Length: 458
Image (cartoon, rainbow, N blue to C red; front, side):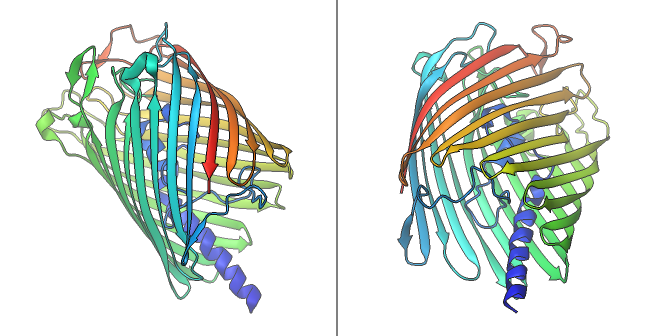
């Protein structure tokens, strides 16, 4: 009886994790947010792992393994556990603006967050607030302060479970991002998301309907000292999905999902000519653990997107049908080493009136190694590529980096890191080509970032 209850609890946890991640399927997962398109890196990076109702990657890796001697104890407040932390990073960025002849600057990055999670036997409630402040004295125009706030929880109805969560993000888009314009300053934007999902269990089967609403709003940008209205990019995104899972063995699941997505561009007063769209996608895949050494997660499918062209559009957008896929492999050859590989291919909505969106591809290999119990090593390589539809233009970001983390004690850790980004733009587009009156941010550049970080946590 106890084994049955334990197995059912494990299944509910896994189901909740996947249902919460359903709206993120086929979205790239990357550690460095500066290298991601706005629409994706927010949804994938900033949906907090510590808030119930949003998903988290399962599977124990070198980084996620519990270390009682070095993990922060947290502060108990009744039936809640509160975990505050503050970090300060100092270093150097040799190409802040991402230009051919880049200008470097000393940089200081201050981060703080506080998380609170319930310790209830059933159900859960949690919240997370983060603040991220970046200062670049030699290129002060690129200073920025971002913050996020999240609240979520789960409620069990017998064997079923309801997950609800909400997130607000106030952030900026850097001129070095993929698929962006070369603004003089980071472009402010906000994103609000509400997520709801319900898991119903039927023996080995689980049925998971879910719904997401996302509100994305951009402030005006500045290019060459001239204000550029970005209101035409403001949009609301609605997504509904139904997922069917089958657990044919512990930690071995088959998944089939159908989802519909609707995008509505809302700011017609800004002269918007971007079309709204509706899309349908069907995916199928496996979540499979082999003897704790290998874990495979793969989803493949197809998506069709239809556009509702506005009357004042200068470009007519055609319907698109394209394959979408996401694959993730975790290899743990020993308890001291974890190798994680991930690849994603999907399609993106247009962000300009002259393009029909772009095909997005991302791949990354990450290696973590526990050199000593309190010395963790990490290295990674990866790339991201945007192939635009309707114009002969593409961008590729090649990335690599390494870090060493010293776990001083339960309250402090020090990390030395190095990150390299090399952007290569299509040579088929002449310099000066513009989309929506703005120059293409497709120039090649090389950027090196060196940082030392001290994190203090309770």
